[in-house]
Image (cartoon, rainbow, N blue to C red; front, side, top):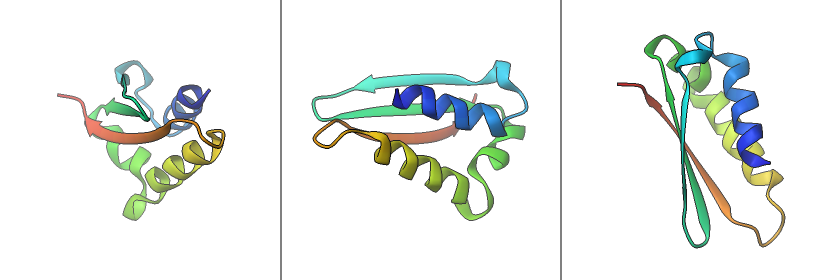
Amino acid sequence: MELELIKYVVEHFAENKDAIEYAVEEKENSVEVTVHLAQEDMGKVIGKQGKIAKALRTLVNASVPRGGKRYFVEIKEKV
């Protein structure tokens, strides 16, 4: 559920949707999601002063049921 939410928000702002890659690493109490974007989409997805990225993280953690795994979202430039 949370991964679909991340994909929806990221793909809404990114123009080069074919270049987006997601890496998911599940740990005991958390899930780390790394989003790899093309250089031209970095600013669009992160937003001015990181406001879109912060809002994305807030949305994802608010959608997790109480006592569920904590999600960490990291946005990186695709190499």
